Amino acid sequence: MKSLSYYTPEQHKEHVAFDGSDYGILSSIWLSQALWGLGYPEQALHQCQSGVDLANGYGHPASQAMALAYQSLLYQLCQEPDAVQRCAERCLSLAKQHTIGYYQEWAAIFYTWSLAYPDPTAEKIAALRAALDDFRAIGGGLRWSYYLALLAGLYERAGDIESGLDMIAQAFTVAERTGEAWWNAELYRLRGELLSRQCADPDQVEAVYQQAIDLARAQGALALELRATASLARLWQSQGETAQAYTLLAGVYAQFTEGFETPDLQAAQTLLATLTT
Image (cartoon, rainbow, N blue to C red; front, top):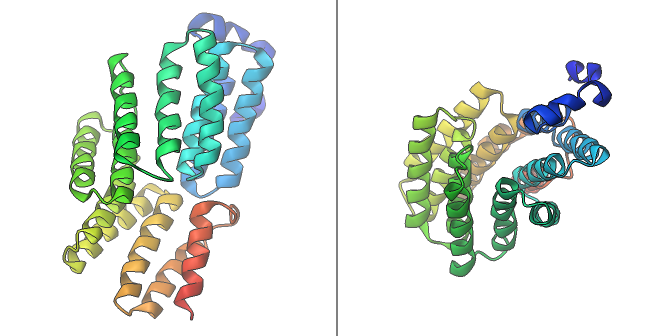
């Protein structure tokens, strides 16, 4: 974060003309994702908004669309579909107005996800698949395992377990091929959720959740460690191991210093309360 203190927009305007991107904007929005993963969601949202504000100050449509697309992604990480929808709509409008195809297709992914998440019908899931196909058609490939995980999560919510497991398998294949392993802990957790819905052997489900926890911990991804730990705690709770579940989850939850109003932390708070009753 210290390096951003040396950034002044006036000294970096040539970068926008040179390659279409301002490094201050990029640094702010990339840093926001790192902060979220490290377990600082409030700081992440503030940092990303700084990038959006900087882009708006430039009045450079491509930079504005880029910042809004990343903000949509950050809100998705935070599991806030309403905020995702608002950001994605703004990005779509700007990208269409200025014919910025890449960010138009990118924003469409988050917009369709935000509509599908509360009620993942077959039609809405198909719309997300179509948005992903459109993104691939223009050459989009970064974060592909993450996008497949969005589909897997919708399939899990819809109860289509086989399709969800297939998406997870595809996502792991992509991650291995591309080396993008940043979302693998969540892929393991989602696999565990799907297997649990499939009534798989609890020991198998527990092992998958533990893979998610171990990987998140190794990566320093406290946000993903919390999710995976909460999933394992729910499994133990269903088996009557409430004290063990509480100890595990409380230990991870205690590492957070902010963001207690965000959905993941709120869910952890609620779960911890049920484990003490």
